[in-house]
Amino acid sequence: MSTPPTPTLPSRPVIGILHPGVMGAAIGSSLKPVAGAVIWAAAGRSVPTSKRAETADLVGVPDVPELARRAHLIISICPPHAALDVAGQVADALGDRAERPLYVDANAVSPATVAAIAERLGAEHVVDGAVIGPPAWERGSTVLWLSGGRAAEVAALFDRSPFDARVLGADLGAASALKACFGLQSKVVPALWLTMAQAARAHGVEDALREELARDDIDYPALISRAAGQAAEKGWRWAGEMEEAADAIAALGLPDGFSRAAAEVYRAAGNPEGR
Image (cartoon, rainbow, N blue to C red):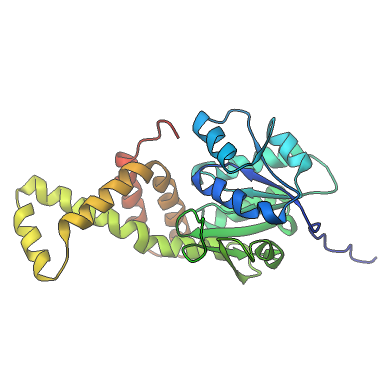
């Protein structure tokens, strides 16, 4: 019995974005020059999401089943805690359909979560993605790491986009593992600073701490202000990312308390209202 040929994307694929938050809108906008259409599922989304999609000139379709029916490529970019559910919605919408879209999970999740998504959708139809950097509107700030058997196919779509797409290898979960490791310094360390500041304040030694840090050329007020601002704005999302990172670390038998504690810090600081 001959092996069926590996499917490939059409020259101008229809690309579905689930969902156009700040990052999703930037990704969708960046792919418009190479796509037949960039679509998003409007059902149940907030007014800010709708406005972002409109600003990015994305085409709204009624719901996830319609998006799954039309798209050749689906990019999931959502809060980490929702990644598996979003993949499940797509899997349910596809049912037993023979022709299936390529699914990029670009969320900050653990390799185990990527494996669970691949189990739902079929590993041959899944690419693992990890965005490191802010929403990109100009080249040079943000890398999209991709892994999986069809990672290069996805990376090619971003060749002239603001996102620098790089292939990490063929192993599903490699991109997410990189994101989890990177998060130890990009999110765990700021959470440690915030905890340190809170403790120093409670003990009445914050001024002395500031003096000691200044002797090491550390701008304590600026550092804490930046960390607190990020936690207030993004903590609702970062908490889930830190839980996923902890799962990735624990799976190796390594201490995962750093990320679990960071998740607690961000959960306390974050505010999901209006997201």
